[in-house]
Amino acid sequence: MPNGSSIRTVQTTGRYLVLLPEGEASSGMAALTDSTGVRDIDDSAVSNIGVAVVALDPNQLQSLIAAVAGPQPILAAEPEQIMYALESIVISGDTANYLQGYKDGVNNLVNSLTNDQVALKEQLTTSAFSNGATTWGLQATKVVRSRYSGAGIKVAVLDTGLDLTHPDFAGRTITSRSFIKDEDVQDLQGHGTHCIGTSCGPLNPPEPSSPMRYGIAYNAEIFAGKVLSNQGSGADGGILAGIDWAITNGCQIISMSLGAPTRPGDTYSPIYEEVAKRALSRGTLIIAAAGNESARNGRRLVPPSPVGRPANCPSIMAVAALDKQLQIAYFSNSSINPDGGEIDIAGPGVDVYSTWSTDPMTVLPPNGLGPSRYVAINGTSMATPHVAGIAALYAEATGKRGYELWALLMQNAQRLNLPSSDVGIGLVQAPI
Image (tube, rainbow, N blue to C red):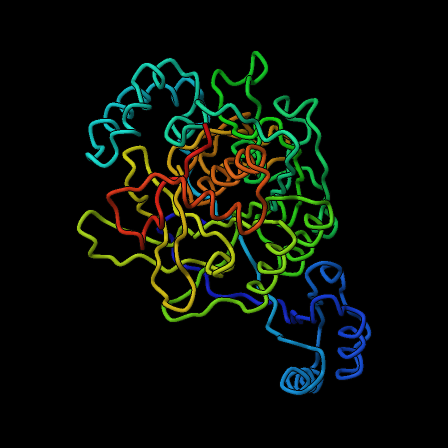
């Protein structure tokens, strides 16, 4: 979703999400059929997270509402919404141009650090950035100093898919599945490939490929779930089916750089919240982008927008975006709504360089230059895979899963001289 653009209105599909009791899917499905008379039920997200998707006429909807309120084993229902890739502006599709501004950017970053950030300042040296060895995000989050690689950890990225022909992913263990009708996993949008590159890109990109390291969990097993179309949108049903698929495959981390905007006063989805709780209890942490609807300025005259759906769920880790000066990105959403909707942690989300789809059918990136192996873009979408990749490092280093993995990320974050409503606990940091 472009930074500072007009906010999309909520779009629904006409279908409904139905939450069934955990561990009682068969009785819940039977109750759903008995109460509504509907037999055409999408059960692709039932096995682990207990969510069915149905199309209902007005009479059937009234029967469902009555069943939720009554003794039937049907816990909740809500309209199915459309979600979007939270993409932003391409800064550069050209590696040389991207590297040209690195030295100035690092000097500004180091000079702007507060006294409370001395430990972080010591790690950010001009030489480390100006030689093009790694992206600024990997420097700021200590990834370059970490001895961990995500080995033995499964990371699911639910997005627009992956460019399976990209040379930087050759030889990697990749499991993929599309949840978009009539589209395969091959990423013709680019957003998913960029996110997977950040979270799980290689330690040493193959020559003559990228001149710098941009990926975090380079030995993690990649699960690429296409839940958003090549146009960058997808319905709740496919996203929830992707979550169910990731849990079935034992993924410890699910990264979702997708969402839909919320308004001040909106509450979180009770179904996504229960899904996230069930995932955590199975050892799977869901990390999601907070959203890019804000249009801040230096004097804060324009209030930021609230955290989007589904990142606004308390049991989903919501990620804000920082720029190179470790300031909140102007587009990054904030903790506004009291009933859920809090920012939990922040990650690098401006000038984030990573892989892009090279498929000749790829939708042109926002700079209009055509398919490129790498681009640098902005967004909470770019901050989220930083947190997901680092979560994989902690999962490898400690064996922690679910709630305990969440706690590790929070305990080890770098505190910043910024409001917690904007950045949560602070900047995510990798284990050393």
